[in-house]
Amino acid sequence: MANKLEIVWTLATVALITGVAVYSTILVYHLDDLPAHPTEYVQVIGHQWYWEFKYTNGTDVNSNYDPTTNSVSGGALWAPPGAVVQVNVTGSDVIHSFNIPQLGVRIDAIPDRWNYFAFTVPNVAPGTQYLIQCTEFCGTFHGTMRSFLEVS
Image 1 (tube, helix red, strand yellow):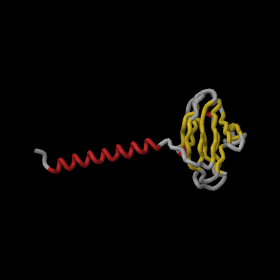
Image 2: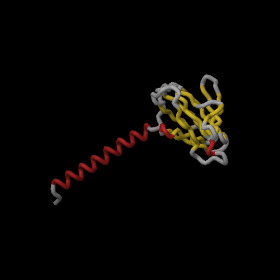
Image 3: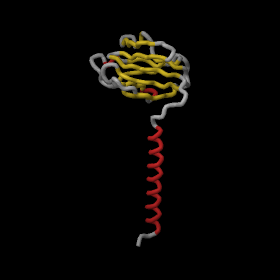
């Protein structure tokens, strides 16, 4: 017959595994929830080899990166500090990957499919920039498919 200590350790292990399984299931279920009232909505369209940002106020900018100066012309993704930004992402030609590494944001931009996610802009000084890059090899000039999230 098993001693009482073996029974206690077995039951404690089963309880721990059950707790982790329940908690993980709840987290996975709510992982892709979008906020009820985001501060900003932006449509992002990946093109070979630039990002297009469309805002709800009608502003539409194409972000072209210049690797010689590490700067962007034509516009960028703008958001105020602390804002909750919902981003709707798609691709126009091939699969791209919208990535803001410093914020842990990454989602695929697939042609004819919209992917949705939201993130919170850090409370930092206006003018702070975060690199946006494509992390899915999308062709010859993939390395220059960059832009910036500008905290405004």
